[in-house]
Length: 123
Figure 1 (cartoon, rainbow, N blue to C red):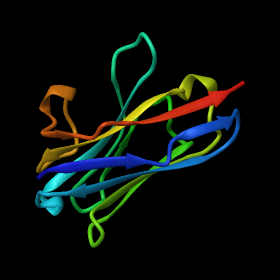
Figure 2: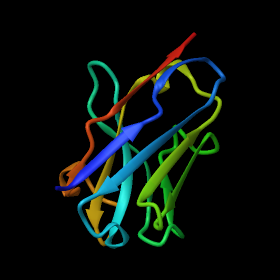
Figure 3: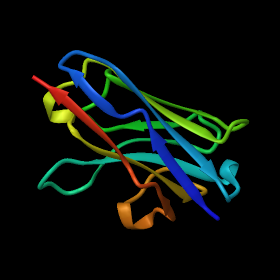
Figure 4: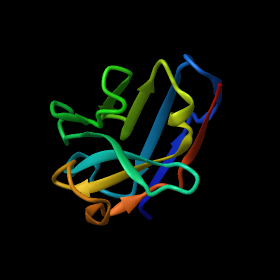
């Protein structure tokens, strides 16, 4: 069974930090790029960050550049999103998703999705 399970969300004050984790199982993790997406209340889901199969290539949305860092551990089938200097506008449900062979693309291009973890940043 394919699974992507996010964890690490929670309530944090403005300027705080959180590290999200995404645990993958049930598929050939090394063959998949991973993306982090988020969906704020009343808004569309948007891409936040992505990482290639090897971990060498990374993508960040302009809104999180310099504050978020994505990484992966292929030995553990894990992907992480380290978030610093959090802002109220970062409040959203965060999802990780897997796409075969690449880490870029539209939401519809991703093959597997997790259930999400809620991040709330208080002002």
